Length: 142
Image (cartoon, rainbow, N blue to C red):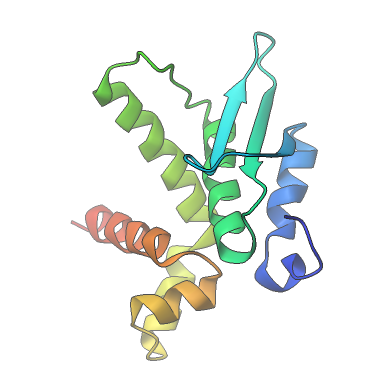
């Protein structure tokens, strides 16, 4: 996790947000989910990141979990699917707005950077997350 490359990939600002908001970010063995955000009874949030995450994967997961914390979008294992989807959408939206701002995405496209893998590399996110960002902005513009 947190290494010297983070400043190059832009993850440091996410850790700064977590520190400022008193959100603990802790390494865990999370091979299935890769990351998790939890809120305790006092409203304090903590994020667990799989110890194998690094680079774009770490950045993407951390932003998504911070999205849960910053928007208060939490659910329990027994929550109905529609509510779970709503919380995941809010977390993704927060992460997209912070990692792939619309104006920067439009500038990249105008400069000829249009392939998903190129955009993912440019913004320091996973290709799957970049697709979510593209889909989000396409939906917003409808």
